[in-house]
Image (spheres, one colour):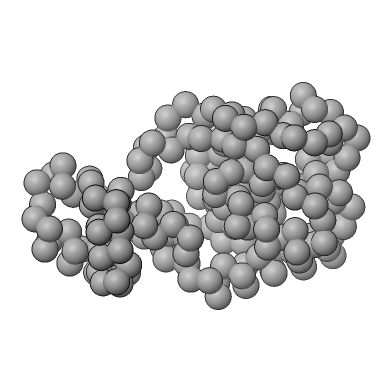
Length: 191
């Protein structure tokens, strides 16, 4: 079965962020710190930090090695502030398998926060972890507006390994939603 892609533009992205911030402010306004899981949670975290008027920190966790290919969930960068006895909001852009959230919560618990609330923009139905707050449930692979080059390169390399011609790859990339200029940029500078 072919991968289904769900393209998110900046308007949808910021609308989801505002919706989630409003819900949080109405129901759980005691958040003292935001912890964004890098890399996916960085842009979302920056928006939420502004919308909630709460400081943001990051932890780096890596799990994906390719589209829909999760490897070992590893913490690559630790938190650089104390969250002891604080109510923190842990965020990521999506909860696919749930393993990243589970590993992050396990790590944060060792730092003794008062409470960890979780939020993601997109939740996959098969995720083993359901965040406290999310904007949308989808089975599709979400393509965020800040990762077009990355996605183009991943798809291109996969199709090249399958022996596809450049014209077929370009046609497919355009068919799923990438524009010609974005494809040309990615190919010129990164292939």
